[in-house]
Length: 363
Ligand code: ADP
Ligand code: MG
Image (cartoon, rainbow, N blue to C red; front, side, top):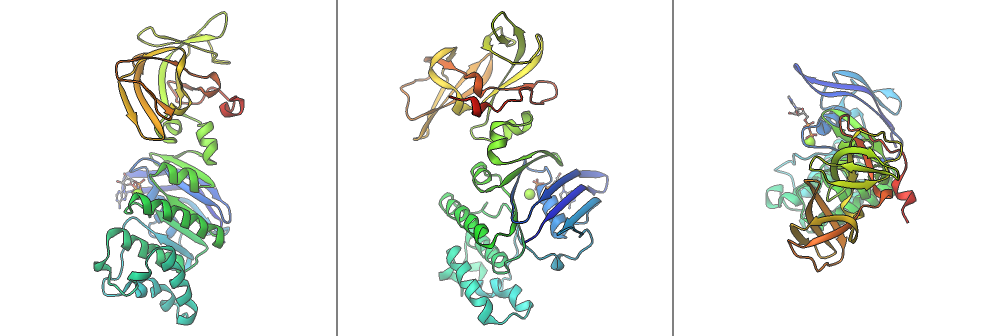
């Protein structure tokens, strides 16, 4: 097992600063998922933890000891990165056996681990093949097998399932979770996939432009995003945002949009005249009742849900209704935006304004 601490970690490439003081404390056995838009510094951060990239400033502690200058091979880390290099002249089996052979481990000790990894990764029929006779997804699984047989204290996965088809991704997701439960090692895992992040993580770290925006359990981030960035990044389809001005009234308040649309809300504790971005997830809007009226523009049946697209206050709105709806483009539709599902953000700073946990009050 391994703990990892990042203390004020910076990274510069020449004059270009790409990681701006990242602080993060990862416990023994934690499954940490790192998400964020392309170019925000996820891979750079992983490479610094792995020792493949110099740290420009700050401290990296592995098991409490400063590891900034520790050579990669002394960090006891198993890595699977987006771009993985297999030895082209070695079979799948020998590629996976490379690490244990290097450490002069007897074959009788590592062979069962390779066979188990091959079963988990659906690679058993391919163990004697050369990498050039494999598909991209199969090669990616070989790279994963190589990391797994080492049983390291710390795994770094950088979008390891990105080359796999949808069905295999789901299967591998379950396998990686099972592997984690069995080995109880520490995992830092980068993904673009919302479902992977939500289902695998003990905690999700949301990064943006070289900084951490929020760290929390998946449902904490879903229920109570700290700012507009996290609110928009976590959840699929993404949270709706309606901008306007809060006008306090005798009972409650209204969000008044630029086109004059008034949406009745409670806006607890928010002052008259505040510029506010109201957030509500598509799955929390109730269709077919309520005082908000929209005209449906697009209807997308996904099977389990129906996604409706419309405009509210001149701003795009997505509604995800369970099941199938007899709604056509052009239809008028009543909507309810339940107050307990509303997120209020300061339009200027993006910071969350309501401090309650919406889901806890939901009926
Ligand atoms: P992510 O993995 O989140 O997509 P990266 O960590 O790969 O992002 O990149 C973060 C930023 O650092 C990007 O702006 C990228 O262009 C820059 N960067 C990455 N590697 C290098 C490099 N070797 N030299 C210069 N800039 C780099
Ligand atoms: Mg990357």
